[in-house]
Image (cartoon, rainbow, N blue to C red; front, side, top):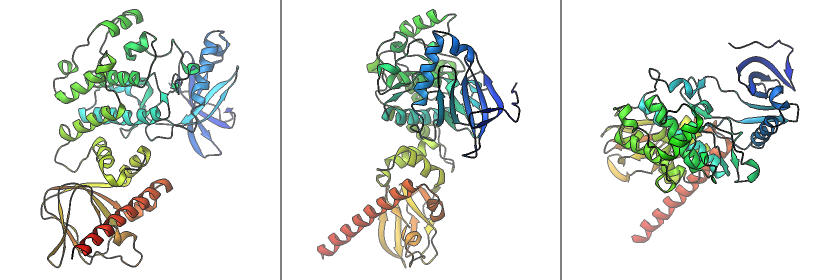
Length: 430
């Protein structure tokens, strides 16, 4: 049960509100940051653990490790670290407060998530962990307890205290982590890279799908023996409705041998997106986030956008499927949105005369949004086949981050340059 702190109780500049959780090594508080005017979560090491001559050094090291990442892991699916204090007598980390629970609550029979949501969680984790990997960070402790689940069904990865940062020996700490989720190379204390996190995420997906861990053991020793020597029950035998493609993804992520495991986060996430698109996405207007993100990443227009910016675009863009013959833009109407064609073909016509054929990757409608002197549409755009569209309203883009807007403007300049080049080629052909 949560405990309420007195109104006067403070930790540094932070006003403690109530206790969120307590363990043998620390307490997590909900607190208020009066300067940033936001709620935060503060993880505080217990005085007892810091006084222990062995554990005190270990946990001080872990707090220092996590504190070193403050301000670096700015990703929508990673818990942000705002501040830290690490001394011999006081250690605490100030983090983004995420309401909800952890994935532990949905790993039990009777509480399992739908398959599409599990794939979404896995995909978002792969993108977040690749973001960390590109910064030289390997988490090393991926497990359901370290993945937060918001009430809206979104996720955020937390607790980078055990992370391997830039493959530095200083951050290589043994005896930390949960053996049930460790890779064979991690339990044998071999050199590690991002593929140990790939294995651990595979175990998390297995548990989310099956409601049990791949290996069951009565002791850590027995667990380690099974991880090194045994093969788990195929996940599809425990949950028969799992598509064969998804079962193959989990099996490959958990491959004992490194050369059989996913070599990169990009390949892992691409396969999950493919399952979301081909196996779990119906004909409705509901698009899985994995499908949306993967579609954006494939479009040439968004080539130079960072992952963080793509997630931002994903949140303010509208996605739709249209039928053949459906009018998307009408000549003479006022325009307040522009579009990207993801799939299918569209025709551009003026007074019944064909002007252009749009194919996947093309954008259209932006002139009526961005031109101060041209607010009306100059042609009709109609679906020739079934098509998938991304629509972005001008006011939504105006509220985007500066970096995101700048990439839009840069990409549109390239589009205009390509159109001018094409027009010049056509003129030269006459």
